[in-house]
Image (cartoon, one colour):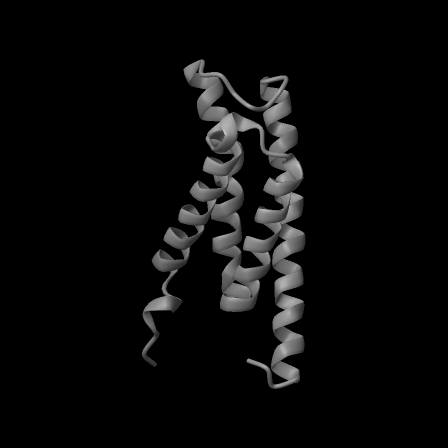
Amino acid sequence: MARSAWGTWRVRLIAGLAVGAIISAVDNVISDGEVSPIVIVAMLFAAAVAAGLFWGRLGWLVAFAVWACIPATHLAKRLLGLPDTLHPNTYASIAMLAAFSFVIATVGIACGLLARRWCSKASLI
């Protein structure tokens, strides 16, 4: 059975990392870090929902890659001694950010899967 190019795990991983990089850039670069955390949470949630809608159960890799970029960026800035938008910039706060954003990504992919199931039953996709 031939698979489309959109179905490969490499494409999903690259897509997730690209979206995660965009969200991290918005969090850390745009407006000198003066973006509300609610915006970042909404972007993460929307990306995870979209992954669930587009790739179904295989979208977990996309959601995981998007999620991983957010705490990884803060961890890299902490290790390099760069100024960060996360206050206090400690390993404990980065771990709490990672846990919270993981929950958001998990809920997002679950909502995307539910929406995909609803759409397929309603013959919308």
